[in-house]
Length: 219
Image (tube, rainbow, N blue to C red):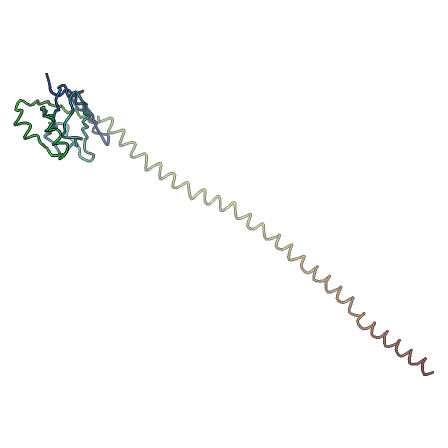
């Protein structure tokens, strides 16, 4: 009986996509804790999470294999993974959980018949048609951006041309207000010139009355 069984022994990746990850499930088929460690011949190309650890009795663990973004794999690659597994005691499991250290050397010495499981790597590379389509999409994006940039000044000029007549139309209204101002001023002057003679007539009438009173008194 195998110590660990896996949901898949082949890893699939797409070289044309970003953030590529492939998950498998490791299941412990024993009544003891199982310790595992993942090794690869190309550690710069992949991340493995977790790359080592322990699985409780009859338990399971998800292991993620991540293709590093920015590193282009080669079509003739020979990438391989090996997962090593061996049973450990509860005391070893507890000590490892507390320290987080890699205890594989001690485990492999105590259990030399440890399990080795090979994982094949399958990378899908884009075809010539896919590369041509991607290149056409990249060329179409700058053209769409350029056409959108040219449309902006045209709409702005049209807006300015529509606003100019509205601004010029306000001037006749100002002229009408200015033409009304002299009329109100002339009316005011006329009223003032009509009331001014009364200021001279009233004192003259009073003086004539006083003179007449004195004349009849001494006659």
